[in-house]
Image: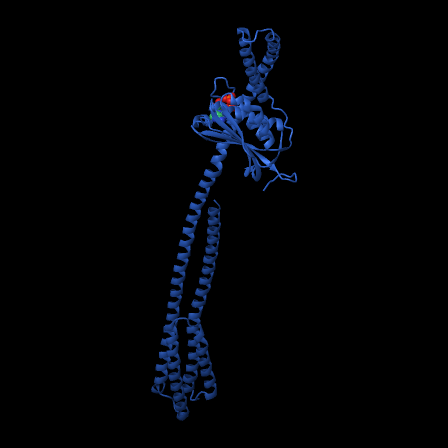
Length: 451
Ligand code: ADP
């Protein structure tokens, strides 16, 4: 997208430059044409005037029997000489320059003829000059006039040349500007398409997603209220049943049928209690009381609590070495999450397996920035999580177990998020699963280890 915007800006600048350039060229052309036009006629006029004045001096002298003053004639003829020299730098084409050279030569011939005529008129004295005396002057004058006419035509031809060249330059510029405009339009279209694809479409998708999420959350909230209400109502009679059972249990003979039934009832009461507690925790998550904790402490406590229970199903709960990692956590809640994860692992194994508990340091993106983190991991070699279950893994009330509530992972996610962390997992169906509680790590001096 940045590339597209840069291309559009460059193209825009290019078009602006071309427009200015073509305007400048058009102005320049207008100026040149004006110059050439007036220059051509000026050359012919001025030369004609000068020559006519010289000729008049000579013709009138002949007619009036008063030969022209040689000094005045020389001055006037010198003026024309100077004028010819002054025109030379203004000529642009080779043809004009060669014509001017011919004019220069013809003018020398003209001067020679006119000097001869002046001498002739002086020798005639009172006699009238004959037509033949002027013949040479007339010939040279005509030659000069013809050459000047030719120079004027050449000058106009050079104007046409300038015009043609400028026209072709302007046409090129116009074509270039047109192509740039078309390109600009296409780039604009491409930019529009990219903006639509990369910004508008994702925004619309996100809008639909957040609407769906909002709807789901509203549904879940009302479901949570209902669940909490039911759980609350169950908890009181359950406590009464538990107390009554406790009193009765002492009266039953050990090993009797009654004692065995009482044990089953006790186990089911415990299960009911767990469900009720999960419902209540989901509906009303407790306040998160953060305090500095070393990561291996909750791991050690959970190991001590669950290892004996899991050993009954021949599941080894292994506490692996964990470096000293300081985190800010609600000890109780993190323990709760670990217990949930270990129980899920045990249920995924069934019998005979290994669950490993460990903590490790890492760097992750949390809350939009890169952080030093501590990751508390629970790894099992259970059946793994199939793709269709992964899609709904963190959905509340989603369970694949006949006795599950489907609340364990959604409660875990909520708790971890309240700690500013994330719950991540890796799974390989048939091989096992590793859940990781990623939490921001505290630096040794107590500050958070953000990058
Ligand atoms: P529950 O344990 O009550 O089913 P959870 O939210 O804790 O609810 O888990 C949801 C589902 O995720 C489980 O029913 C199970 O299918 C799957 N699951 C969770 N942890 C694991 C695991 N370690 N291995 C395999 N599947 C798991």
